Amino acid sequence: MGNLKPALSIIGCGTLGTAFGKLLARAGYRISGIATRSLETAERTAGIIGAKRFSDCPWEISLGADVVFITTPDDAIESTCKVISEHKGFEKNAVVIHCSGALSSEILSSARDCGAVVASLHPLQSFASVDQAETLVRGSFCAIEGDNAALPAVRQLVNDLGGLLMEITAEAKTLYHAAAVVASNYLVALIHLALKLDRAAGIPPDVAFRATLPLIKGTLSSIGAKGIPEALTGPIARGDRATVAAHLKAIKDRVPELLTVYSTLGLYTVDLAKDKGTLTKEMVEELIALLEREETKGL
Ligand SMILES: NC(=O)c1ccc[n+]([C@@H]2O[C@H](COP(=O)([O-])OP(=O)(O)OC[C@H]3O[C@@H](n4cnc5c(N)ncnc54)[C@H](OP(=O)(O)O)[C@@H]3O)[C@@H](O)[C@H]2O)c1
Image (cartoon, rainbow, N blue to C red):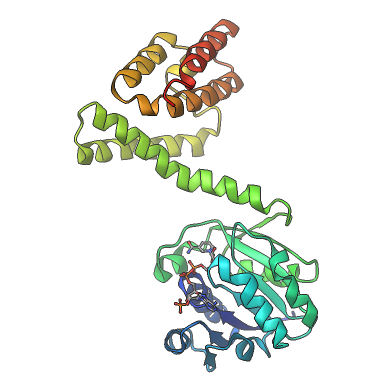
């Protein structure tokens, strides 16, 4: 690529497309054009990013660009790419990129009909707004995969965004995304579960939330400092069967619908505690027997 930064076009100007456009323009890329569904949004975003051309016809904007970002919602990426290809809207050797975590670069395969190469670049972060995305991309890991010929340009883009590189394969994409869902969305669900138990205990929701947050932050900081499984504490890590049995009984009495999820997570935690090496064989067997007995009763 030499020192001259490639010309970019951005198709789909929501949170990520706008933030990437702003960050990459600042990093010296020439934004050759902006296209999105509504002409009004395209014009507004072009003004924000400093792009001269804007349109509601993506193929008018992709032509002439060295790199084309398709940052529409996931379910419109493949069809947007196809319609551009059908209009011969990709330059030969252009690098066409989408930013979905769940989908691989293969959904862009129609771009190859024009001689373009394809890749995906997924920032492993959740952005609620353009401003937040502009700040958070720096220092976030970005998973990339795609055609070999596309990867040097994609690595350079990650670097210029201030992101950290994580190279994966197209086949790994779905499991990689499942892991992200567990780490982010299931964490929210897990905290919700804790707050439900607090509510059953009679603790007012606002108090429960404020009281639980420092515990979560402390745990995250301990995970950061010690790693897993060393950061695991609590009754399962101690082999305290009486406490686990008391939890199961209280949950069965007051919130039986939570028994299965509590027991399933408990069994997973026994495995972690085994890895930590703090349990005797007898403790492991008794904990598993206790938790397995209750695992299906809440259903
Ligand atoms: N936001 C995040 O936290 C995040 C994080 C990592 C990756 N991503 C990925 O980034 C991509 C974009 O997500 P986002 O959050 O930026 O979405 P978004 O805020 O909903 O923006 C999507 C944009 O695409 C436009 N659009 C919709 N359908 C289109 C079409 N058929 N042709 C052209 N433009 C179209 C929309 O235009 P209108 O406004 O006119 O409807 C909107 O401007 C997705 O692949 C997503 O998985 C997002």
